[in-house]
Image (cartoon, rainbow, N blue to C red; front, side, top):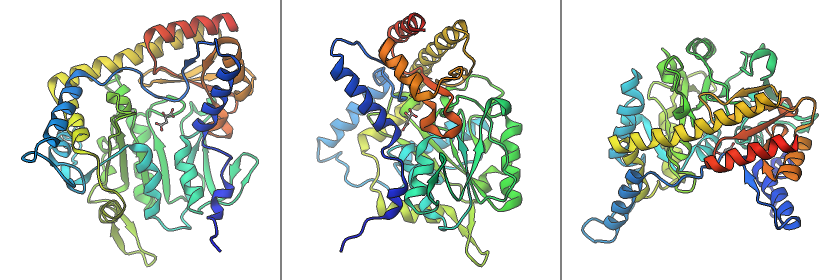
Length: 407
Ligand code: MLT
């Protein structure tokens, strides 16, 4: 008899963004005339920048000739891309990361979801609440949690991110082995200072713990005092893995490319306490289960680092940041409290006593605007909604006008 992985039975009925998509589709079916504006899932709307598209085309043309055709690529990704990433994203910012510590992938969602495979089943995991659901759900699937009760899985150490602590995860009172952090944060939009990240790095070093640091939104940091990588903090290369994505930075949500940095100094431990190279484990995992990102897509990603590419992605990110500012001003005018929206594409809006799904329904029904209910990110998110700045200027302005009218 073929038996199911019963851990899947512990999961909530469907993935948050699938659930929202279904509700929106139903609303559209019942209201065919409604012009829905989507400020829910963080999906970009602007086309790929011209420098990226030109390189993408070149890559495709190379695949069309026997003399330049490429079959399977190098396991960790093409050196031309990894070298640009190491030099530009790390060495230029004083972080000692080399190209062979970079693993090119099809995006941060897969890597943040898959990485937990490398760890024992009985480790203690600290996860912020609210949180990007992938970190939690993949650990549920792997059987590291108990059942879901009163809005929480047993055996997880939740780090409440609430107004009182400025939505900043606090170091847990009990010992933990694996810590998930994301800055600029999805969903709250908050950013960590150097001192805040340094406290986590110290904790991990003292406790032989590991930090999984999701930096998918680092391109939105415009404040020069804020760290864009955890490796800007001394000692982080021994205790942290960093995930990055071209999705939000350069419009790759549909094109798929990201990367994970696993420094060679990073260790995990055997049951007997002997150090094991994390880099070796991830290399083993990826070379067994993943066959790389296509050559044209890696060429396209490389173009992000050209002078034109840099200029174009800066403009792209600025457009979304200006949208975020418009959303913040509207929310402020309406008298709602909020976090994020600066150095971040997400605005975390306090629903003034409304439940987040109720607020979601209200905006959908009265304004035809889609947001993300905070409750979908965890129990602490229930009083909030997340508004995303990823849409055209025109749609954001119109959505804000509609929200003002509706409220
Ligand atoms: C989000 O809206 O939280 C993100 O777009 C989801 C993702 O990147 O997978």
